[in-house]
Length: 284
Image (cartoon, rainbow, N blue to C red; front, side, top):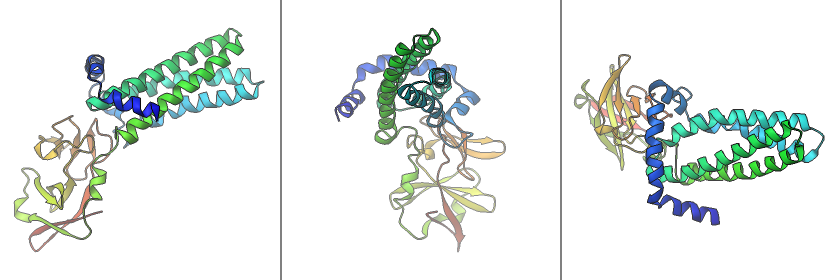
């Protein structure tokens, strides 16, 4: 609870922006285009960072078990080294995700990154000590690294579950739609020029022409709830797409697929049909 209180205060500390803002600009200048999309996990369907951290965390935790049991010095040394090496790509993907977060999330993310950087330093020192034959020192540094990286993991969990960082924020809006079919607009209102903004209960949706039928997409961007209805319409590989005006996430209107990040998860679509010249939609 004490750490949670600290993190709540960190979110409201504008002084951290003096470090976060130039760091964000630097990361965005380095990771661009396809590299940025790859690191966001657009190709995977969700962020890479949570998956990538399994390698270093698994290796380091296994090393701690062997250090506790004793008699497995060589194996523990290998695991510490593997974890340190695996932490580099995990951190790279994490930094790329961090640069697309909101201001308050980036402030907390600085502490997440700092804890993990310290943990990597401790494990690197542990590996070097073990290589020099200083196994007792290596063990202590390893245990210290495990404590610090666990703290970093808690902060990461706070970002994801408390701050909704890197989660599809459009998906919960589907649950705010009541059951049954809802009348959205006349079929004639929807043409090839672009989507039509409509509402189901309190949820805004985009109605788009898709060949002989229509598609209905949740209008608020899953990355940070940006208004897709105000975004630019672009064509990618012959398919009409919409670009979020806030952070540039680009979604294919026909199926909600992500064409460009920072969003990594598909934009939610509803079931749709045309009946008596009216466009109807329902929850999936």
